[in-house]
Amino acid sequence: MKPAEIRDLIAVPWRHGDCVDLTGVVCEGALDLAGLDLTGFDLSGATFPEGINATGARFLGVSWFSGARFGGKATFERAVFANDARFERAQFGETVLFDEAELRGIVRLDEARIAGDASFERISCYGNFSLQGVEISGRASFSGAEWLGGLWCQDARLPAATDFSDTQVHGRLWLRRAVAGNAPLPDSAFALSYGYTYI
Image (spheres, one colour):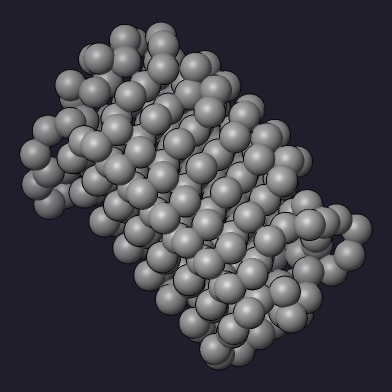
């Protein structure tokens, strides 16, 4: 499917309950959604060989990328997700950028595989943020991130030098069997944590 065809289907006014079914599509080129208002969609199992640029996009409905494959860079910097953002089992072949994104629903990166660097610096997340079973092979930074709905990291495998400086976790912090490099991920990695911590 051509990138312009995908864009034309989802860059439309959102109405409650709308969800464009694009499961399993193969995008024939880089998908540019930068700065657009987007309706709800399901791109589960979709393939983006040349990546996606959603810098500053506003995802007004559900945004489902479950099991999607990104061959090129995936950029969501300064994007606003007004509803749930699902990336569980997604595969990222290059860098992933979510810097300064605003995430108002839940975020699921469960079992996602990130081959390159991953940056979530200064994100604001209002629902639960799940990194269960995620694996990041490159560098990773969450510097300045704020999680208002808790952070779930069961079985996460993060780089040894993952940056959690100036972070705040409000609500449950779940770190069971999470590792940074070869060592358990400690709660002391987070600058401030309010609520219960499970290690």
